[in-house]
Length: 323
Image (cartoon, rainbow, N blue to C red; front, side):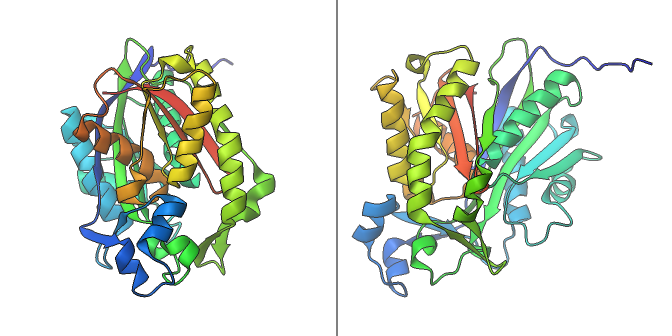
């Protein structure tokens, strides 16, 4: 017996983008008050100037609701026009209940398909690929994807190697149908043999082998990005904007350098949002895109290459057309 096959949209595009950050700005000098570090040491190693920390009264769900609501406004849509909510994250205090159902309800999206995705810092690219495919197969009409993290809940504040890097925030995109493809195929994978390089120490605090992760990211991620470009039917010279996960400015610069060796243009704009946002894991890519749009660094129609990478080790990327 053959089952009925749903028919979805021919293609997909991004309808709206937004982000939010907590109010508390934490500078390198603030961290130096209780850590053995200083402003120049942090800038030299990870390229961060300041980051945002959420207070105890602000949850991951709170941040996701704000970013998601603003993304709907940017798209010119009402909550009732969304039928699926995906929240990539790796810092929910408990795996049950998930964030997505709570976020959907608080935004006013009733009876939505709602689930979380945990691919750590690659999570947003995973979720964006899923959203696009759900729409193209007919399983969803319009999807709200919100990367949200409260990393200060899982970082030891006295662990110099990690406390200087991670921060809190949320970034969202609304994905909908399109006659022309504006979200390319996702190029993803994992390196499970390296799972011990990033993990939760004592099931409480995030820990990473910094040098091992740095070597892996600076050598393995550019080829993933190039595969995403090829999957979209483009060449590196077609890319206007590169937005890697904002893990470390030195990693971002290394990926951009390798892309240019492979033919990317010298005038390709490269995201450096980490300098003033820190590493926000699954929130970093949509947050960077939103901030770059506000600054005029990204314009409607620009060809944007995104690539996320992190714990798992997991990685994913795709080409999108800026809304």
